[in-house]
Amino acid sequence: MTIQTKLRARVSPQVISKVTRIFNGTLDDIFNELFQNARRAGATFVAVTTEHIGDACIITVTDDGAGIANPADLVSLGQSDWSDECQTREDPAGMGFFSLAGLDTVVSSTSAAGAFSLAISGDAWTGEADIDVLPWDGPPGTQIAFHFAAFPDGKLERAVAAAARFYPLPVSYNGEGLPSADFLEGAHSVIERDGVRIGVFRQRHVGQMPTVNFHGVTLIHALPQIKEVHHAQWSARVDILDAPDLVLVLPARKEIYRNAALERLVTQCREAIFATIRAEPFHRLSFEDWLEAKVNDEDYPEASRELPPLHTVHARDTYRDIPKFEPLAANAAIYDEADSYDSVTIERALAFSRGGVDGEPHCLAGAQPLTFYTPLRQFAGYPWYDALSCYIRTGESFSQDDGFQTRSDDDGLTFRPDRITLELADQHGRRLAVPSDFAILENDDAWSDPDYARIALARTSSLDPGDLTEFIIDAAFSPSDDADADSYDTQETRFRHDAAVRAHAILEGEDAAILAGIRMAFADRVAWRIPKGRTLQLTWSGEGTDLKLLATAGEARP
Image (cartoon, rainbow, N blue to C red):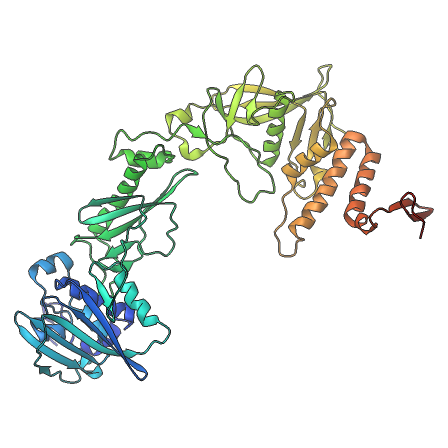
């Protein structure tokens, strides 16, 4: 066999036999393709009518466009007679009509070149039968009628309405005009450039919503989204007006062809979002996004000098809620807590510094007053943010009035010093000593058992057992979400019981702790059984028990 030295790509004649599989044959595809052909032909309206015959429906799509000059082009896959201008601007593929492939179809058209009518049977689409070209005496434009299965559930009406919603021409259905809408309706801003309209939306969930509108054909394409730091979420949608370089993947036209024009569009969407944010009273762009915004706008302002105040983080929190941002105080600093133990400890230290005087919970009073804020590393790089001292806790010390370091109790988990000092340091090496009357330190087993938390409480502390119980719970209670674990309420009740016993033991001794445990168990499981107005008298010991249900004063015993 002689091998050819030169070849040219060609379409095999066998392709026509598979034409019915090029499109899905859905109503959505059919209406979209026929509507687009009408628009390209210069139509001013599209009319859809239906006639139900038994279990079938004859659907007719009519337009007043320029019509079809050559019927052979209509049934030639990949061939079209669109004008040179249309070819340049739209890149039509000559395939849209074949969305009807396999359906009995009648096409009638009147153009400047003449008029004709084609009756295309189902098997004629694959080239297995001839198609007769018949005379036609109708108005300018094109009329396409095809058989389709009947849809009693309103699917047909929904398909027509969906195709018409963002289509640029008026569409009627059985004589009634269909509603239309601007694809960018509800946009925070609309920027038009290079043949496209870019709508920028604020706080809009994108999900699986269409993001691009090609003259009524809507597509889902991942367009840029920009999230400000704990602030607005911005996204973009695009309405194509006249952008010849933006083309769709053939033949189905369900997605945008990836080329330089698409990359440029994505860039323009980001620029449009940044421009929209620029017009807002303030922004909270991350430092990285701000640098990108400055590429096209050297004077783009920095993020607002605001941060959320320092707030307590609880071990039980599954989501860390950030409080409302506030302008930075003159003595602003950042405190970067390590975990809930650290957070609860510093919360008490800040309150202790105020000596019981009401004030902002994130402020440190004393000789070196500071207002602490929550760190947001997305702002790292902004000069105003980097200039803030960022403190972390580097340790703690416990001492007695005589100056000696205190010793822990025998269990190594409870400390009762005269003084507690938290040691802080910032990124510049500056050190800060913060007095307190309480500190709770992490221990490996403390997450599931409050008895293992390492607790330091000054001898002169004003905390009562209730306060101490809440601190232990806030720092250490982290419920299990295992399938075989008890409910949250059951776990919290059990942990609260153990934390209260520990708090009473530290502050009041073992007998008080035992009584506190009994009291809580009694309140949870027994007290509700005592009738209203009655009194239960209970004596319980190893030698025996005595229970009496007493009547109220002046009431006879039962």
